[in-house]
Image 1 (tube, one colour):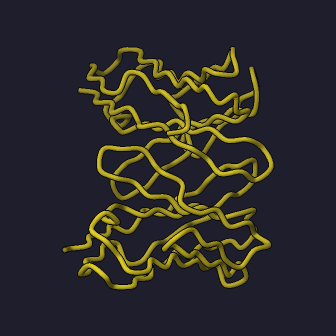
Image 2 (cartoon, chains in turn cyan, yellow):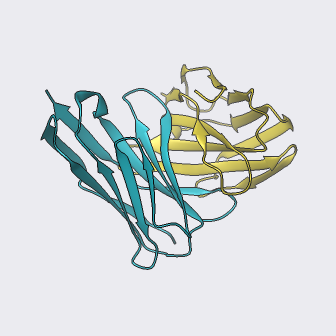
Length: 111
Length: 112
């Protein structure tokens, strides 16, 4: 059974820092991996999607990498801002677009 | 947002009553999903649909049923609600071909 773990569970940083969020999964037979952002009381916003054949994807200040063989992905956020405060979730596609989620990293960026 | 509306947004009901949650999309996406989100468990897939009248079970399908009679609507039914089904329910949509999923704003369901 696929299991997804995110470390750390919570992270607090001052504004301007570069930071890395980690995601690991137990079964490397995935089709792709998706990073989401969730604000309190809201739905999930898709940030980046990495196909299994790709090594990384970039969008603005966000960069996500994927090492399928070792079962790891990282989300790098450059020059963090208070508006980046949210919970970040990673999810792996196990087929038929069925996603298995981690429990998230709660990020707080203070001014 | 990706044109996904969940209704109701909040509901409080009693154990043993039937409950139906609705997901409506305006994107004409083929795939639709229902997840539940609980503290310590993250999001877990309940049921999904890969076309009109085509549905299948997810990881936590016991106690839930679904129906999809039109492309735009995906209904989740709790036939006889239990307190363990208190949760936040999210609908998602996607296209086939390894495309990203897009989520609605959720329904907060409390069963007393």
